[in-house]
Image (cartoon, rainbow, N blue to C red; front, side, top):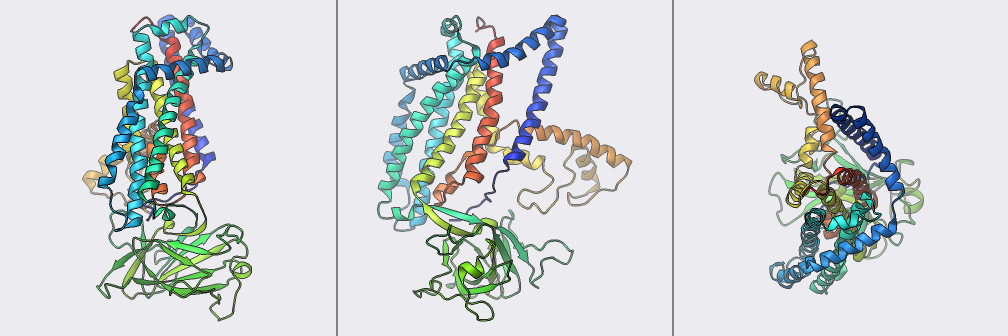
Length: 554
């Protein structure tokens, strides 16, 4: 049950700055292009019309009537029900009827089976609700315009943004109803499939620390004066770095805010999922040997713990206050390196900071570690809590799809609006890492390596001269001009990257299926901020498109 990614707290202030810059640039470009076109077409009256539309936006949104929005939302809901759009429930029920045939048996591997059950439920909910509700949102307004049913609405005292908001609220109501029903069915199905092992289905709450390494000589810097790192054993994606056994090499986690009141029943529990790498066969039936050392960075107290065997691909739970590493019961008396008895609360956790050093004791072998591979386990939460947060993340993604579909339908026909919505969704789902790599000067899988020559002109220069991305080119006038031109291109790509939302971040399956609680700062907050940040401009675009559109034109 390893996390293959590194959950980091979301920088809300930094995200707001990026959002403000991108919105300002896009609004300035759109307003400038529209102003130029209207001036060339109509002269000064065209500019006056553009200014009137801009000021009318603020006036219309301030005068929005919740009653009219709700009435349109109810009409949208009833219309979808008449079209039998909720037959998705039947498809969902059929999938669950026969899904158990293809799931692994709990007796063979309970952890793996539970993870597969939870992943199946959440992904099935995602891929059943999003297409259905997305199609309804993309075809709603275009069909109303084609059938001229919208003409009856616009003759009433209804503003255009109320039509857009009413449609969004109506489709979101449909999506929420579908999500609640299929989510409830999925939860009951999980409980029924794992009745004897449901105690293993929980929501662990971790405290993650910051990871650093010591070299095999025990130094914090390597021979080049760079910050020490672990050994690369040849993995293509450098997610985990390895510590050499029976040397002074160490992996050190620093945890902040560790307090006895936050711990589980006053017990310090370390959970790890380290990877083992063998350079020789050794004893195949015996796991690699490791050892934890607790260090208080403020008073220098060092407490070496009993050795442990690293069970690869399984949870390794180490209760510091229990004699459980060797199968012994009872309380463990903690002693420092000089053999003096120390108190966990007064000596080890004093100050709220704790360093945990990890050493591999098996000679000639390596133990791989990444930041999320070791954490302090806080009191667990109910599985239903994590499951509900996973459904909430799906609802936020569903909200973006609905707003995007309604916005597209304000100026496009149904098929084209569906294609546009699907294109933005697929780019945000499949290509966001590619866009991130294009605009970053660091490798995503190894941030310590710098990528040079990302611009078009510099790449064309490096190819015939056989200069790799790690080699710096000579500093002369030609190269400075090339880099200046490439910076314009890279800045444009940076803006394009933020025009497409990262839909992969809305998938909380990795947390829920691996029995982790969905964290607020690393998952829910960025999802909520992304939803608001994209939906607000999309709603404004839909308002302008519907206000400027000639409804008689089908």
